[in-house]
Length: 228
Ligand SMILES: [Zn+2]
View 1 (cartoon, rainbow, N blue to C red):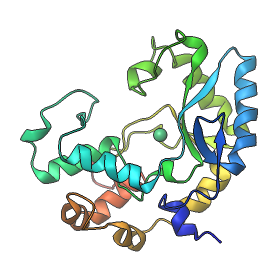
View 2 (cartoon, protein in one colour):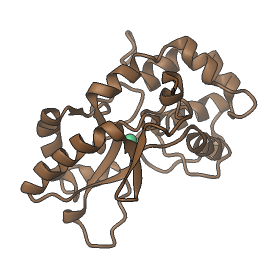
View 3 (cartoon, rainbow, N blue to C red):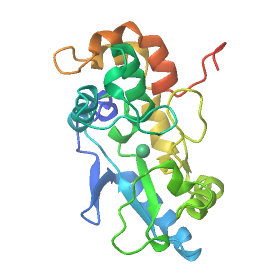
C-alpha cells in the first residue's frame, strides 16, 4: 500500500502509467487526458505532454544544480540575470519563482502536466515552456486560450494562471482537479518541515528560516496580505 505522503513527495511511482512510452502520469488521468486531447484535436490542436511526473530525486537535482549556478536561473520576469551576484536568500527566492522545492512540486503527483500543441510548430520543434510561446503571437497562444475556457469541462484546471508574486504564470501547466485537490490537502507547514533534508538540499537552512512565506507564496501559490 502506498502512503499518500510518498505520492505527494514524489517518492513512489506505483500509481503511474506510461503515456505513449514518453512520460509517466497518474493512471487515473490517462482517460481524462485522452478525452481532453480528443476534444482539442477537433479544434485542430495536437495536444502533447512535455512534462508529467517528476520524482523527488529529479527535483532535488534540478534545485541543487540551480543553487550551484550549474543550471540557469531566470529573474522575476523570465530574463537572464547574474545569479552569482545574489545573496543566498535572494538565490533561494529566485529559484522558487520557476522551480518547486523538492518534495513540494505538483509534478510529483502525476496529476499535473505541462502541455503544448504539436500542430502549431514544425515537426522537430522542442517546446521551451516559456511565456513567449503561450502569449499573443506565440505558437501556443491559441491552445492556451482554448484550455483556459475548456479544460474545466474535463476536470482540469490551470493552477499557475495568476501571478501572486510567488510562482510565475505557467499557462502550459494543467492539473487534474479531482485527484490533485486531495493531494494538495496533504500539504501543510509540518509536512514541508519534514521533507527538507539538510543533508541533501542546498540552502536548506534558508528555506527552513523562511518556511511560512515559502509555503504560502511558492507551495500554495497564495497571495500574502499587505504584500504586492
Ligand atoms: Zn508544470
